[in-house]
Length: 419
Image (cartoon, rainbow, N blue to C red; front, side, top):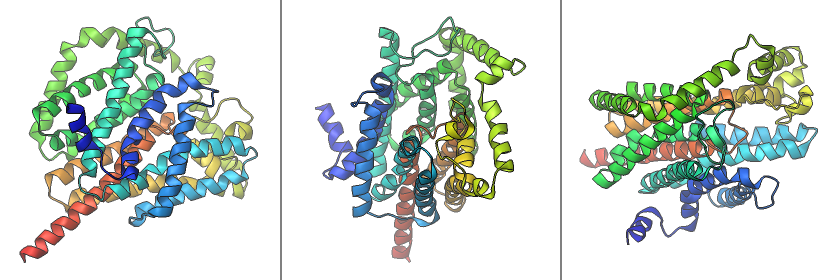
């Protein structure tokens, strides 16, 4: 009966809206299962991509959506990088990576359209919580049954992190930033206990994984949330509670964190030539910027070999930093379009935060700004070659844009009716 009640609250009669609500679940399952089906025609990642590609074509034909400058930047991203892929010497490589890029960015349009409907953001929030629950369940089962990737080589107290390994920490980090909004959205005590439990597991996961970009993104994100949150007292209580929790459970995670820290400290010692080669992100900044400065005007403007940089630089390792991937493959124009999308998101929600005195508006505006900055931090380590966490990020951003516009219109109508 409880499952039926949840389904009545969560899903609706529209199959397309239900498909969008199920996307976080599909993305979660594809993310953790893809590793086990590499080379198979039944690879969940490939099936996910084919489904979203087909669904998006049907969706765009039926429901073309637009919302000011932000939509312009979304369509510009989808169109520009599609066009420059045609200049690649290997279409199979370039368009394979472009498909992942497309799949993630097009989520924005799904969220933008369906969040105009009453209650969609609540239903989407349930989907995101189920997504996080799947990630945490995978982490728990991976350690019970000993499958999946470990943290780092040379770590003695290593845990298993399921199919995606420690990279999943970025997705968990981004979802964790939504919890201040979830606590406002779900008032019942049973929901709050679920939120507390998931937040505890999420924090432990991020600490255990010790993924530098995930930790940095989480810290910066929550600093932004703390600064923008309208009720400072609750933030202080939350910080105290988190500090007490960290001290209380320190014996559980401290050995793992120390071992991970030592392993990463040795790996990032750039005085060693061997480590400089391993930490190739350090070198690719120089390789890409030098090639861009010394390259032709064509290379500077529109780049070369989009998503096929291994061929362009004659190396086996692809570029791992999003910004260097975009600059090298898309040139200055591509880099401008790429950054323009994130900038438009920050500008939109900064204006929403400053122009609306409502508590809820300030909470979700601060959260979206925090998530955006965190995604930009994650980009230093590289996330555009995968559908997650960018897919869920763009679904949420599109959803909050429409949610904000609908609430603003409702308040305007209410104000006019009282005049």
